Structure formats: C-alpha cells, structure tokens
Length: 221
Length: 318
Image (cartoon, each protein chain N blue to C red):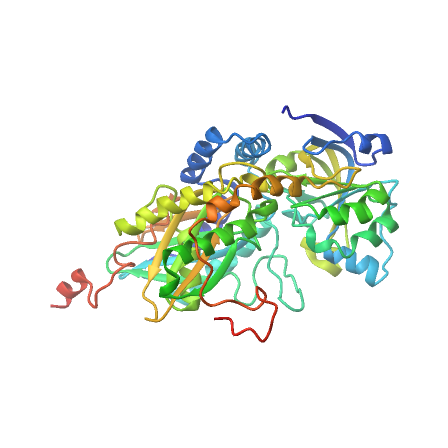
C-alpha cells in the first residue's frame, strides 16, 4: 500500500474532510490552537469567553503543550511541539465541538470508534494523530509564527491556549474517517489475531488484583 | 574541589544535550529496527523519527515537545569535594534545571499534583529528583540527567516465587500490550525490568535499567543476559510496532536489573523509556576538566556488589 500525502487547511471544507482516508499523511496550513484540559475546563466549566473567533479563524484543535517560552519583550520562542494523549479529553469534546466548530482534532493515540461515531461524524470532524509522538522538532519547523498565547497567567505555559500559524506543519496521520472508523482499532484487531501464540505457556499471577476481578468478595488467591 | 560555577554551567549544558541530541546507542538501535520493519505505517513512523532527530540537532530544538520530567543522578567518587558542599550541588542542579527550561526552551511540565501550580521552570517540591551513588575511589563527580517522558509504560506487581519465569513473562507482555496499544508508550523503546528489592527499590531498579543502561549493554550474570535477549525477542514477536501499528519492533533493548528481596516474594516492575531517550552525562574533575558522554555507566561492579565488604575498600582499611 502506498501512503498518500495531502495538504489540508486548518479551516477545511466538508469535501476536504470527506476525501481523507485512514492512514493518509497530512500537512496543515493555517491557524491552529492548542487546547487541552485547562482550556476545556476554563471555557466550558468556568464559562470564560474564548479569546478567538472559532471556527472562522481555525477549526483545528491541537492537544498539545509546546516547549515554548514568553520572552521579556513579549515575543514568543517555540521549539518542539508534540501532542498529548487525547482519550482523557473525550468528556469535554462534544460540547467543545458544538461551541467552537472544531473539525480537526489533533493529538496522540486517537479516541474510540464509539467517540468518532457519536460526536466526530455528526460534527463533520476527523482525528489526526501526530507521528511516533516524538516528531516535535519536525512539527516545530511547521510553526511559521506564534500569533498569540491566551490564558497563560491563569493556566500556566503548558496548559495555555497557544495560537500557531502553520506552514505545511506535519506529518500527521488520518486516524478516523466520516464512517467513524478508528485506525488504531483496525490495527489492534489485526495484532490480536496473533496474540494467543505469544502468550502461550505464560501464566496469570498467583495473586490477583482488584480491578481485574470485579467481585470484591473474591479472595484473590 | 569542584567549583560551583562549573557544576551549574555543565548541568545547563547537559539539560540541553538531553533534550536535543538522541544518544548514539539508541539511535543505532532504532536504525537497525527501521531496516527490519515491514509494516507500512510503522515503517513510515520510524523514518519520520529518524528525520526528527536530524531536525532537532540542526535546529538546536528539543526532539519532542513533551520534554519529560528532568531529574538528576549524581555519582561521586569517594574523594570528590564540591565548593559549598552537597547543599550547594543541589542548588546548582535546581538552578540549572530552571535556567535550561527557559533557555532551550523545555516544556514546564512540573506542577503541584493537587493545585496544578506551575512555576514554569520544572522546579518544585521534590522536583527535580536528585539521587546519589558512590564509587569507592576517585575525586570526580558524574552528573547524569534523564528527562523521562510519558505517563504510560510503567507498572509494578508483587509476584511470588511460584509465579516463576512464565509469570514474569506474562506481566511483561501485559505491560507492553497495555501501554503499546495506540503507541501510548512511544515505542520502540528501551525496556527496563526491575526484579526484587522492596516495592520502591523494585520500581527504582526497573527505571534505572531503562534509563541508565545503554543499548548493547548486558547484565553480567549470563543467565540474566540470556533473559534480556529472550525478552527482547518476545516483545518483538507481539506483532506490534511504532504507534501500536502492525509491526515487528516494540523493544530496542531489554535491560534487567535485580536486587535481593523478601524470601517469599518476587516483585517486578516494567519501565519503558521512549523514542526520545533523553539522557546526558558529564564527568567533572577537580582541575576543571569536563568530559561529556552518553553512557551513564551507573551499574558498575561496585553498584551490583553482593558481598559484605568491597575488596579494594577492605585492602585500604587494612
């Protein structure tokens, strides 16, 4: 299978999104913002006004804390950027998408096909995964300019909302599609076929742990 | 006497090296893995990682945006002396951690566990950790910094002698599977296994096995070295590669370290380093010389000693 490379806007059209296939490699142009638990809690739970025009300025939400600093003169220095694991943010995303029109959720590890079907597809959104999770320096080269940082005083630099002008930022991998199919689940299913053979001969631990056995009366021996 | 200013300056340089430069031993291991990988997506990922190391070096940029949690391992020759004493050394390491976080820049990852207070400098209560070890001779100090990333890839379990090798294998596979899916552990990585000790030392042994031993190193006990080889093969036969995609490279190296434990138990920990195996080492001499390297050389014969007295020390005492 040959791998397709696609350049995509951070304010993509329906047609752009519909054309994406699982495993495509994507490079992004346009404005992107970082938002993770700090931003979600502040915007959705504390009802703070989001300091950007969304989605007209950007429909690309990066689950990321950059390695960056604010200089004494107020300018920004950003080195590496990499994603953080997205599954932890599933509880905020339906409301976030509704409020901000986010169509590209970019992060690490993807979400479940259940999440994709229940709120990605209805919102016309797909998930893009960073590659290897460690390609921070490559992604850093795609940062044309740091336009702004919001809420850094309230949330700290790591949780702040960084606004990044991307110039062919990537690579990213398309990890969900408009059918709600999950790339990682597809891969896990293939891997699962051979797992029995690898485990052959190994033994479960003699002392069990709660959480593995849900029966709290179990003697776990 | 090793000067305070040299300590701080060297420590700052180590912080930057760890974040930016992939250690040669791991890079070679990953290149070998990339050459054997057949999965199309996992091959693409490994190639992108190799490009990324080049980009980081060229741009003097951190390899990964998650620059981990900086920590220090300090090894002292028995005759080493520091200007201002050991409290000054700790001060130099805390200053260097904060300064390098701003200069490189690193991500200010360290926050209060409850109040999420972020000093934006990777310094706080118990951060960075500073751990010590000694060698029976020498007037040098080895400064080792490791910025281990990741919330994933680590587990502990109290096993028992009756669990045997097959129980050890099961827990090892369970750990790789649980954290390898979707690539949460950022594999392929150096895996460290700690066997024995108390619960806390078991965790420490496993972590040190993953972060303080290089690719290509071997445990001096030939039966443990054989297990290291076997476990590497076992991990790589799961069928999982980078990012949890179908592939054959999960483990670049498996390092096992042991410590004596309670007669009834066999505690075990598993630790995964990551694709940005951030470690850097320097030896500081009292005449001002500083020698940089990437092999911590932590597990010396002295560190793994089994006897009451250490032979050279006993000779000196007599």
